[in-house]
Image (tube, rainbow, N blue to C red; front, side, top):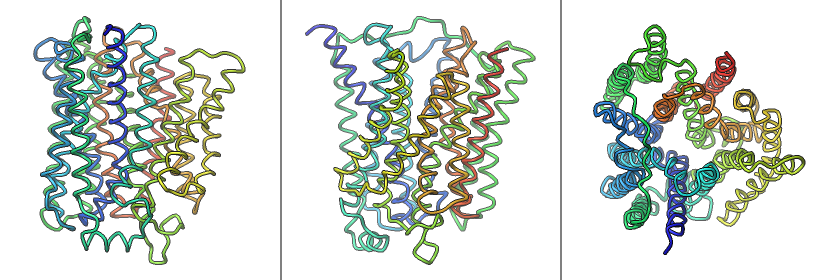
Length: 545
């Protein structure tokens, strides 16, 4: 078998790994409201699914940076990207398998068992952190360098397909193909018709697939380790700042978890969660101020566009995750008149799945459209592709939901939201700062419309958040690492750490929901989009200067 054929096989396996990331992450949108119902926990506790999953990304990236900084050598580069992916797959496999004993014999209302679920998800997330750190440069190495961006866009597109399919598959596994009312679900949980054994089997299957993927990488001896020979640059002061931040965050969440040993004080938990947010923002801004005065040993943190970009990634991941993670509760709550807070009939966990799918599908629509420029189309072809590709992606989403047995007729109006996104692409003119600014403004408008309107308009407004988040990651990255020179790789590592936003912002909204109501808690998303719009303007000005 030729080496090139092996490379194609590896790319196929790598693309499958990207699919898993999207599948598991998006499935949390269905898993969270189910956990709240099954374990009888509050909204803040349910958001700890995101805390465990995305917090693991931060700790994984931080551990790699600590090891690299102490040895003076890039640990991932020492392992090789191939081995890094294998180690990550094995770690995620361990977490997936750990889900089986974690929930074995759990009965409805056993909230203490829920924390074992979080532990298993944390291990899965740690594995994902390793995989993602290695997978992007590994994909570039599998063939001609000039086509590396094409391979990354292919992988990203498949990742988005996983985010669209994940909620549907998990809903079918948990609830079957027939939508059920909230009363029916509660009765089925109480009589044992719905149990956690299906989740156990799902994660055992996923663990087996992770193991198979690791074996394929390991036994493909002709695959390159794909090392990067660039020098690793130490940044001991930046490391110290991150360690102090981590210790303070750990203390905050220790006191938060301690509250649930007895009757929790909602206001105290909210204060600790807000404090954790202040710690992140304060640490990064103070670090940048100190680094500007004395650049020695601060590394990439001396650049204001990077530090502001770290906060932007933190905010972007947080708002992307929190909109859909709390959406299930927003649609499920019954105000006593059979209606939820936006004036639609209260929905059950199984009825919410297609809407979670369409939210994540919005990211797929945007990413497919964002990949068009990579292929350098010109003239009218480019214009038509920007119009047709988003609707092709939208058609795929409708088709997936349709064959799964869900009624998609009410989703057709979402096509108008897609049209607005297409307009945003044309106005952005492929400029990262301008595109991010436009999509940030659209994000603000969509959440405000959701807060100030009702019915289907409010529903589509919240769902369109996925459309407007879709291009933010590459835009923020491009703006943040611009002008970093030899610190570009280090800056990229710092940005990946800020996936931490997905661990802090959703629980913050969750506790706000417990105190002021789930609908009103969406003001958090408004403030997130406001900062992202500010960053777009600020970063654009910094780069010009």
